[in-house]
Image 1 (tube, rainbow, N blue to C red):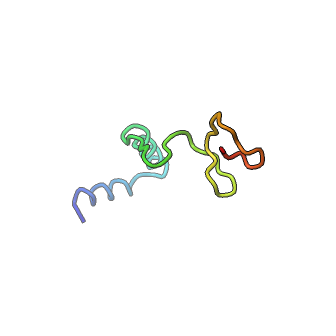
Image 2: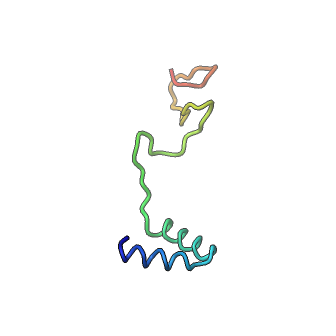
Image 3: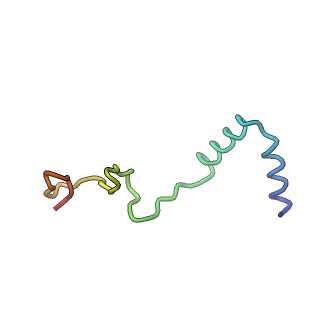
Length: 69
């Protein structure tokens, strides 16, 4: 294993659970940029019956299932 990783692992494993949580919260909120890649990178969609039923536009929609027509 790389000595840098070993040093980190030894240091990280010596932290308390609260310190680990604080550290990870800090890293994820301040050091890692959000990744918005993929087919739908907007607001989180609503899942119903395993199908993606994201925002509905002003188009006609099916009165039964709510899908755009």
